[in-house]
Image (tube, rainbow, N blue to C red; front, side):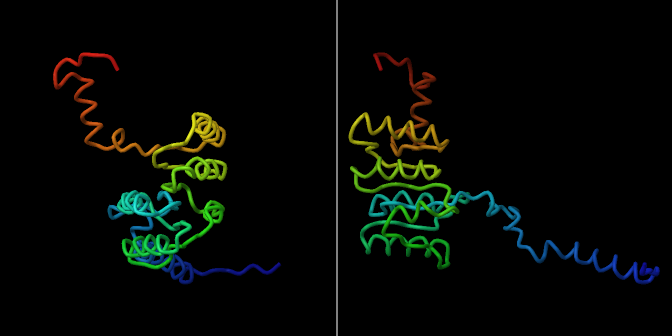
Length: 198
């Protein structure tokens, strides 16, 4: 059995090298990758894809682009010009290439790296896209109208519960900060006593 002996001098050299490496580590890894310097670590960002990114979809997507904890990586629309415009919007915001365009929403939903989708497609496709997203395990932000029938809406609700996905319905007059403040003021009678039936 051969046992290699380490003398004191070799031990100190090896230890000093490891210490320099440990001290230098924060300078090699960007602080933003660790979630420091007022940034969100990539592992804590919600990766987003957009389905139906015409005028309304791009308007909604703009809000996602300004969220530090979200990153849009893919856009999908049947219209070539809408896809290209949305991709350019994303890449302009991030200052880099890499946003992928899709013609078929199923290809976007098949991506394992996408956590959530925003859906602003044509009204009669809303529930179909959202159902497919929930079944793919994606969280959903869905523009109005939710569906064309109560049965569609109930099917979507059931799918979200079954697959454990988060669902947000885009009714700006319920989620916009100004409207939330107005509701709080009214409920807490800051504007006077509220009369009448709801």
